[in-house]
Amino acid sequence: MEFQESGWDIKHLVKLMVSSAVYRQSSAPRKDLEDRDPYNRLLARQTRFRLEAEFVRDNALAVSGLLSPKIGGRSVFPYQPDGYWDNCNTFTGPLIYTTDQGEDQYRRGLYTYWKRSFLHPSMLAFDAPTREECTAVRVNSNTPLQALTLLNDPTYVEAARVFALRIWREGGAEVSDRIAWAYRQTLSRAPNDQESLVLANLYAKHRSEFAADPHAAESFDQIGQAALPADIAPAELAAWTSIARVILNLHETITRS
Image 1: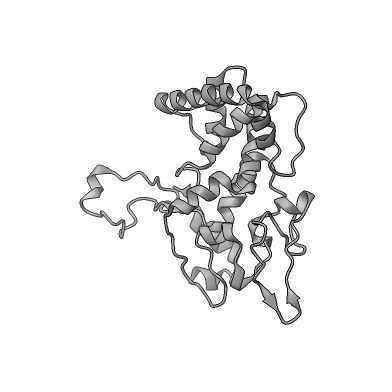
Image 2: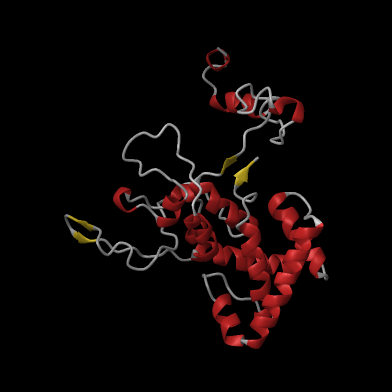
């Protein structure tokens, strides 16, 4: 009735829902309600769910600072494994996937070119539907392939590299300060002592390894189209990229709670 009486105003309805007490609840379960409502059927708390495929990528790009705010326009072609379309034939012959350059590489997932029979593999890993039929509710799976995508897909490696540069430039002078800054930017909270210790040890380990192998550091830093900075040593950037990759791969980073 609210929707009808507002003149079918979609923006009004969305605003009403997201400003409601139920929507703004914490996802942390209250002990006094765990037994009474273990499956949250009474909406005693906010429900956690993983971000949808397009938003997982958008989130990583937004955190890094790469996400393009441009609205509208043609479909775009983000990074995709070479040869993925080799067996994708049409009536006019084999299709060629040409990776976009510049701003188009960082458009929102909404604008990714959609080939229903050869869905973009990163989107497929996070349960995007093929769009061959209406999908009212998407499946939410949890597989090792998703973690491997977040660690190794060029989109996420590049986002981690650019985010690493922000961490190094804006996070402060101390390793602990930079880790805390990265957490606040990504998760809107400070890391606990154990998290800080693990990441500080990881940074020290990778900084030492990349310093001993400059070629590996330079190769790692060159993934993606974003320009390489001149004010940071390759080993330092590579080490902080490792930290950024870990943070972007956290369950909490890709979960709406």
